[in-house]
Figure (tube, rainbow, N blue to C red):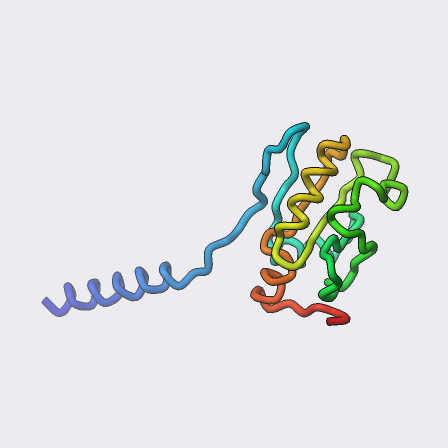
Length: 139
């Protein structure tokens, strides 16, 4: 009986430990007319920023702060009129963000329609970034 209770206790601890693990968010492809873009989590973006190999664009309007490493600020609804600021190579990696993720999703879809093939969007935007424990600049 004692052995059974010990096994039951160990099983309960194991089950509790498994339930406390945070869910890991992985890249998510979003299909749109003309192709797709990829949603990335704040943790994934944080890892990407350590070996930055992309153009990082804040598309939020009005200004609400930046994530460190931001290269450009282009309003989401003017992204198509500002292609001269973006790489001419349509395969260049572009990472977009805004306050909540809504404006950057619109900008990502616009860029895909314009032929860009390597577009990423910060899922949850700056709100998700802060909820994950990361800081904003110039807020």
